[in-house]
Length: 323
Ligand code: GTP
Image (cartoon, rainbow, N blue to C red; front, side, top):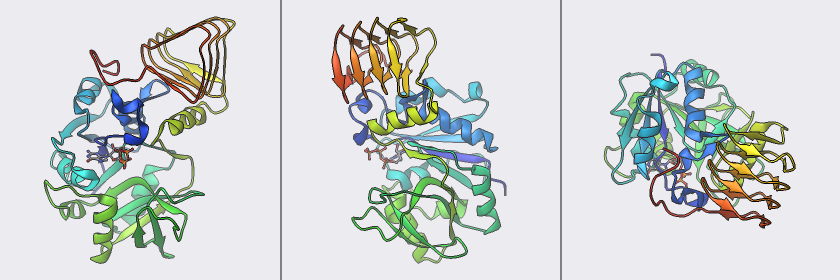
C-alpha cells in the first residue's frame, strides 16, 4: 500500500536549544523565516504525502494556530496532543490513531533538515518488503547519535544508542518509515523511546529493518549553534536574507549567513556576522554582533558588542510572536 501519511515528532522539550525554547518549541523556531516544521511539511508534500499528524506535547498550543488544518500549505494536518510526553515511540503509537490511511507511515524527528530523497527511501522500503526502514547518514563524530550495523543487503543487524566509542559512523538520521503492523507493536499510552526500546526490540524479534543510506546535506538542529549553521547552509554563500518589511541602514554590514526577520530594523554602521534576528526586533546603530540570536521584538542598544550571545529570550509572557 502506498506511503501517503506522515507523523512529525514535535513534542520534545528542546533543552539543548535553551534559551531559544523557553518561549517557543524547537520545531517552531524559524529557519529563514519559516518554522523548521514547515520546511519538513513541504518536503513531505513534495514526496507525495497527503496527510500529516503533528505529535505535540511541550507548548502544544502553539502549533494549531499556525498550521490549522493544513489547507494553506495544501496538505491535511491534524494534531495528537500528549498531556504527558510519551517519548518518541509512545508519540508515534499515539499519533497513528489519528491517521486516516492504513498504509505505511513516514516519521520525522522535528529537528532535522535533510536533502535526502523521501521517494527513494520509500522505494527501498517497498522493494525490501521492510517492516521499518531508517534514513542513515555518515558523520565524523557519531558519539551524540544512535549508530547501526548494516549487512550487504542494507538490512540492519544492530542498533546502538549514543556511546563513547561508536563502532561505526553510520547514524540514525531521524526519518523512518514504519508499516502499521510495526507501529501497533508499540504499547499504547506508555512512555516509549523508539531509539532505545522499539528498534532494538524489533531487531530481536527478527523484524525486517533496513537502512537507506544517503549522505547528502543533513543537519540535526538540536542546539543554537546548529540553527546558525543551518541558516548559513541554506543561504548557500549569500551573506544574508531578509524577511518582509525588514529595514537595513545602507551603512550596516551583514555577513556570513545571517537572517534578518520580518519587520525588524538594523541601524547605521551595525555589523552582524552569522546572526539570526527575530521578527520585529531592532539592532541599534553601531552594534557589533557575531553568532548571536536576537529574540523576536528584542531591542539591542546602540553600540552593543557581543559574540555567541542570546539577547531577549525569556519565558513566555503575553502574546507568542510565533503564532
Ligand atoms: P533535547 O531536550 O534538547 O534533547 O531535545 P528534544 O526534546 O527535542 O529531544 P530529541 O532531540 O531527542 O527529540 C527528537 C525529536 O522527537 C524532536 O523533534 C522532539 O520534538 C521529538 N520528541 C522527543 N520527545 C518527545 C515526546 O515525548 N513526544 C513527542 N510528541 N515528541 C517528542
